[in-house]
Image (cartoon, rainbow, N blue to C red; front, top):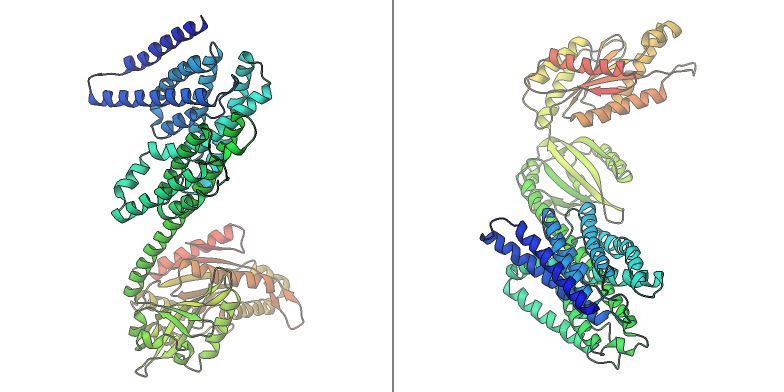
Length: 619
């Protein structure tokens, strides 16, 4: 009588569920509709088959099936489909799931509740994975695998087990926590074992690999999968010696050679062979004493361990391959840039010997690049400039996080002396040890001569020794109309001492003069020799920082500001007069008048004053 009622309920559910899906479709004669229906019937049939087999083969003593691949099947199909189709897929699987439960599992209300929990479990897992990892499904990183294990191996099955244990205790005299444990173990391991292979299969990744792989790689794949099959048969085809680790070697080899495709196919081969032979009473599980349910749970743990070994390995290999491909592409791009740039890129060892020089080094020095490799860089430098260059190099090597700019003269192969500007920084290896220097070098002979000519023509302020306003105006006009600069033209920086009138009022004009003299000395000690320092009037000063970008100029100005604030002005009496300075900067450029440039820098200086003084601002 109970069997007839269950069969009648199955027929009603099947007709109501799939019938409603069919009637909800529009244009039933279109190819799109037929393809959609074929897909729905396929997933419904597969879900019914997997549910029925799990209930028939792995449900013992009328309890919960200890192996449940059906949730993994729906979970994988949902992730391979647009979210708008999830409702139809869930309904298409809910009806066959209820039918399988009524026929081979729990009947009545429990036979409806448990299948619905399975559907909700798959939906929750797919939804949470999409929210946590929107591009989930490729298993291309260890983080992706870890999130999958956390959600589908722990969180979702633990929640679904709460309701499932309640339903089970209604139909079977079994303890709540035992039912919870059996459900959680079967569904957690089922999602971990069957989820990844099914996702990659349903997404079409395996098919795309097979179509796109070259013939030699396909031959390698065939040989490796044959080895996996032989190893699986050797491990599970006998029950005398536990050879569970034997399949690992060819499976790892297939993963290393073929990536995710090799891992997925190897896992499928192992699951099919291992599960079939174990259910037939063969394999390492036959050596265990205990019920068949316990043996299948141990087998699932073995399968899950294999998945957790191979998937992170495949993900890490994929990530490293991508990084290697990017490195090769970046190397090709960098070499193309280096071959065509006018600046010289030079790498030197700790002893100063050249390890690499870009092709433009020959145009600058007259020496062939091959002749420069292995040669000490210092041999090219004018002896008068060598101590300064060596001092800067020592500073860079002792402070790997900082770089420096140094100008010096070298002797070309034809005997000509040229000025060069070198931006130099330390090279650090993977262990954090300094292994040399990297320099970007530009010839600045014309610029140097131009600046020196300007300096010779400049007039000085009698108090501070800085250029006066007239000399500054002439130099700025000449600089803005010049076209000898390559790259960054430079920046103009205006400095205004904060509360200088208060210093004069409190300490007298003589002390105020000492503060001005001290500030100019600090400026000259901080900027480069050829940077023009001028006093515009009163407590206002200007510096033309030639060839520096706005970021580099800001770094120089910040050093001036911090040193002036920290040191103050020490008088002959030993007393220290504290003072601060506000700064405004503007970028030089052709086509801009000196009036507009000064106005822009002055506006930036005003922002520094208005913002509280003792700070720098850029236009």
